[in-house]
Every structure is written in C-alpha cells, then in structure tokens.
Amino acid sequence: MKKSTKNLLFLTSALIAGMHIYNRVVDSNAERKNALKVDNGHYYKWKEGNIFYTKNGTGEPILLIHDTDSGASGEEWAKVAKKLAKNNTVYTIDLLGCGCSERPILTYTNFLYVQLLTDFIKNVIGEKTDVIVSRDSSPFVLMTCANDDTLIDRIIMINPQSLVSLAKVPSKQSKLLKNILYMPVIGTFIYNIKTRKSIIYERFTSAYFYNQNKVNEKDILGCFESSHRNKSHSKYVYACQKLGYTNANISFCLGKLKNKITIIIGNDNPENILSANQYQNQIPEIEIIGIDHAKMLPHVEKSDEFIEIVKPLLEK
Image (cartoon, rainbow, N blue to C red; front, side):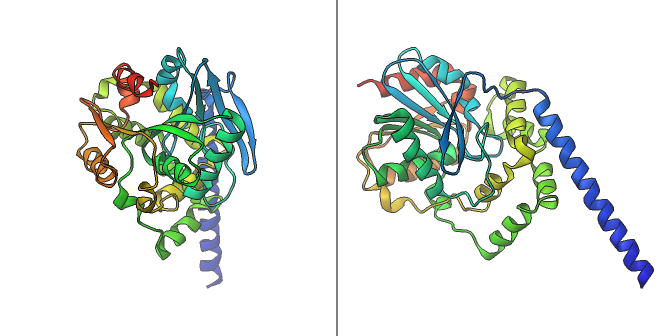
C-alpha cells in the first residue's frame, strides 16, 4: 500500500509538473510574435483594472467594441477603425480580461461590463457616442442604454447572440466547471488545450470566415497572443463566457430603448438570421442588413463592404 501510494503521488506530481511546463511554453510562444501593439494606445485606470484603448481621428465619436470569444481584442477593428477615423473620432476598447487590458481573477458578468462601458463613456469619451459592437458583447451595450439613455446614440450590432441563449443562466454543473477552470495549473492546462493555435485557426476557417483564403495569419497570431497574455489569465473570461455568466435576459429592457438600432449579419450562417429576427420581433423598427459571402466576422472579412453599409447609418 505504501509503495502504491508513493507511486501515485509521484505520477500525480509528474503530471502536474508536466502541465505547468506546458503552460509556460504556451505563454512564451504566444507573446513571442508581439502581435498586439500598445504603442499608439492609452490606458484608462478603471476600478477593476487598467483598460487599454485607442483613439484616432476627429469628429463625432464612435466606440468599437469587440466580441468576448477567447482571443478577442480591439485588433478585431484594425481595418474598420482606420477607415472610420477619416470622418469621426474612433475609440476601440479592450474589455476587461481581453487583449491588452488587465485580467483580474473575478467572475465576469454582463453587469460588470455594463459598469465598464458606462464609466468609459463618461470618463474617457465624455459625450454621447455611437457604438458598433460585435457578437456576444451586444447585450452589454443594450443593457447600458437601458440603464442610462444619455450615453449611447445609434447602435450597430454585428451578428448578436440570440435572445434565447442569452436567457440561459449558469447551472450547478457550470459552477463546478468554472471552479475547475479557475484552478492555477490544471485549469490553465485545460484552457490552453482548448485555445491552442490550431483550434483558433479552425474557428476562423469554419465559423468566422466564409472564404478560407481570406484568413490572415496576423489575425490568428493576434487571437493566440490575446488568449495567453499574462499567464493565460484570459481563461477567467473564457470560463464565464462559455458557462453563461456573461448572459442576461435582456428581453425586458428592449422595449425601453429609443435608440436607432441596426443589425448587420453574415448571410452565410443561418443562425445569424434567426438571431437577428428575434430582436426585430421585439423591436420592429430594427433594420437588418445582410452581407453575402460572410459569416461571423463580416467587418473583418469584407471590411470595405461593411464600411459602405455603415457610413450612411452614422450620418446625422
């Protein structure tokens, strides 16, 4: 029995040591290419951690908010921001736990991001702003509007998450899985396996882009680095997003909104159309515009066409 116990302890220690080494190698490889640039950015000292953002151009303000999927950051808007900055003051923000912003160990919720957007608009932008938001970050913007109608003017959502999935709350099993992913070595190892570069590449080629030939290595490297900066502490956002902690039943607040809302979808993903229709059923005034030969990231894959759609929507 003593020998068996010693062997078990040895194997367990060796396994954990191997996981730790793997984790450190992943972190080192992710930041080696330096794909995320901070040279032209700024930091907003928020109560939960420093928030990285960029500001370019002059004119009426526009805030660009990235998705919350693993590896997401303000780099999602690289092509779009430059073009919009010709006529507007364009802000991009790395949400807490993402990109070049800090990644504190806490539970990431819809309300946390509503607080962040509220404070950022008040303290950094300083005036009412238009917002273009990507995918699963859309409910943060809608809830911010419902809480304070002086912050956001026009809203453009790109492939927003369905209202049905947003209404799902974490279960007891979700809480258990969250605790496992938050573990220092084992949780980080699981996260690193789930967000390795090959998985990110597969997401781009199968779900994000319609045309695989348009997938850019720079985008892959940017997502990979964002996923694993600061010892892979993006795992906390990943766990909360995957397990439903960032969800919120926003159906009740939609009727309160007076904003002009437009939804832009990639036509080659049927789920995008179904989700957009759910919002339009709640607010008939919502306009839905589709981009052909695009899936989840039409603003990245077809940025020129996206800009041509967005420009008239932003005109006073």
